[in-house]
Length: 292
Ligand code: IPD
Figure 1 (spheres, protein in one colour):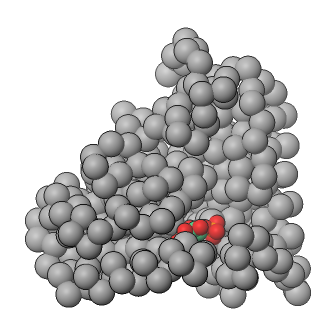
Figure 2 (cartoon, helix red, strand yellow):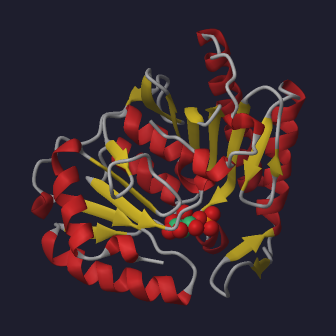
C-alpha cells in the first residue's frame, strides 16, 4: 500500500477519516487523472518554447523551467474545475488542503533535466490519495508515446499511441539479483550524491547492470512493465513516487522502504518479489539507510 501520511502531515485534512469512496468515484478519479495527464503531456511537447530557460532550485544541479510551473497550474486548474473540493500537493510549490478527503499529488515534469535536454524519459505524474492512501496513479511519458496507469486493487496498464487496447502490466519473475537489471537515481545535493556514488560501488558488482533513466516515476513504471528488475533511491519526494509506486505495486512488484514499511521520502525500493530481500540486504550492507 502506498501511504503518504509522512508527506501530508497530521494537520492536513486529507489524513482525517473520510468515508471510503465508491468504486464509481475511484474510476472517475482515474479517468480525470488520465485525461489531464495526457492533455498536459501534449501541451508540454507542442508548446515547448524554442529556448527553454532553466533556473536553479535546491542546488545548482536542481533545475526548474517555466514549463514546470505552467504545467502544474494547468493540471490544478483542470482538476479543480471538475473537483473543486479536493486538495493538491505539487512539486512546484502547491500545497492546498481540500475538504473532500481526496489529494492530488502532482509532478508536472518528473525528469526536468531530461526535458531540458530533449531526452525522452520525463513524465507528467499524477497520484490520487484518498485520506493518505494512494488509490490511483498515472505516469504519462509523452516523448515515448506511452501512458502508465494503475488503480488500487485493480491492476496496472500501459496505453500506447500505437495500440488500441491498453496492455496489463506484470513485473518480471526474477529470482537472482546477480542476473537483475537495477535502476536507481541521484538527488541534487553534493553530499548526498557522494554517498550515493559509494553505495553504487557496492551494488554494481552484484547485479547484471545498473540504469539511471533520470525520472523516478519512469523507473517505477519500468519495474511494473518488466523493463528492469528493480529500482531503489533515497530522498525522493511524494510527487516523484506516489503514482509510479502504486503502478509498480499493482503490477506485482514489492514496493517498500528499506525496512519493509511503505516507501517514504527517505528510501524507496521496488522490485520483482523474488529479488527484493536480496536487494534489500545488499543495500543495508552498503549502509544505504544512513544516506542523508
Ligand atoms: C527527479 C527525478 C530523478 C530522481 C531525483 C528526482 P525532478 O525529479 O525523478 O530521477 O533521481 O531524485 O528529484 O526533479 O526531475 O522532478
